[in-house]
Length: 588
Image 1 (spheres, helix red, strand yellow):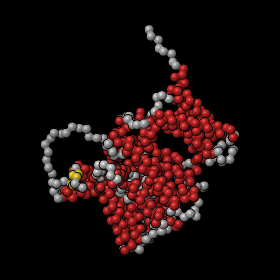
Image 2 (cartoon, rainbow, N blue to C red):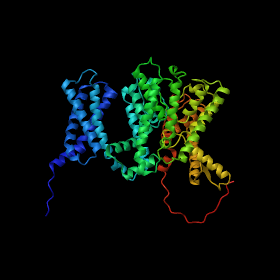
Image 3 (tube, rainbow, N blue to C red):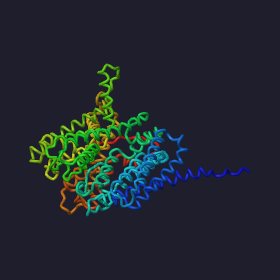
Image 4 (cartoon, rainbow, N blue to C red):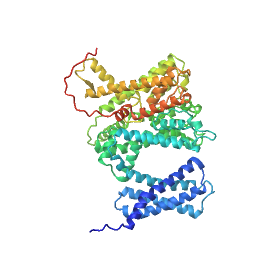
């Protein structure tokens, strides 16, 4: 009888290192980092001891695993882990050599943070490496998308509850923390507390991180890290990510993913530089840098959060055309969608190569790109013209940088960005309705903007016009026929959004009844939340707990997409065709 092989002692040790020690060390480092940033603000005795222990345990565990995993792991991951271990060992040696410890000055804090981040980076790399086991399950992409956003919202809520995230003497309730986290992750911008005066620098940095993660999407960042560290994605990951970023070209998923992340950071970096140069040099360079980076990220992600007490209507930004133009450009680029920006970049490269005499095939812009560009231009110009009439001809509204610039800025920001350069409580009643229409339409698919999307309104109305004319020729755009199914789906989305808003508005009225709040302000707030805009008629801080909860739901649904939420929650109809005779109905 064959006897079972004796367990390999080395294999047991390696399994313990991989399955027990590594997660434990990562958890200890996370606890130390959060305690240092959110509670103590300085190196205490236990933080000193736990940090050094976790770093030494991490170095030992990685050294034992290098021999086993060295040949199996991708070259990028091996190099990444070697660099992390080298950094951790060097910093630990530095801390021990100089003798920094408990009660030491604030100088070594950076070393401790870097040690903890090094261990955390290794743990996150390991989680990303094994994420395929999770995504390989037959989860609906909608559940993956909603789950990832919900997880980040919960994490953001817990982080914003840390004592050092608010100003001294302030207390952030659980509902306010959840509201702010949802607004940041869903890149909305509605705030129950003033971001500049209520949250500390630590809290503002947390909000900035939530905006960046929410704008890109946690799944996008995770898959991008998998591409960088592990040299590729599985077929299932490509299918899943393709549905999330709305790209069915599986062979180009990695390229598109890389373009999305690089384009985002490049645009934000350029925007931050322009904003930095456009600020008053009398402010300290550190404050200028932080404000510039925060507003660049917030503008590109169409979030609308600001670190100024009165937003961009604050006094020292009065008539600052540089800031307004730069923020407008970031909003528009972020709201166009990565598919459109990538198509435009390919078109521009092809034009340059052809002009240089190189044989290059003419690049034809997609119909999607053309519809988005035309619709966006019409909405920007038309919205600005409407606001010039309603705000400055029929009403004596406030202005910042001139009437034309004020109208143009708010025509752009109303389509899901949420910045304001004038006090929203002083705008005219007719302008409120113009803004609500622009907010409802929103930006374009594949970007950080919300609303029902430019393509939905254009294709839906085009399909309706085609049907009213008989519908024989079909809807044609830029010498291409748009399928009737696409037009019907666009009209369905319009109807679904209207039904959702009407139902939620009735609930909103009931929750806030008896408080003297006009229907205009309630509807404006509701559309702003659903379209992830962030503009408010000074109502958000005055809402009841029930009203805040309803706004949280609308921000979440608006960011995920109403159709995605409905298609995920409603089970698909898998029944076969009935085979029964059909009969037409009278509709008119």
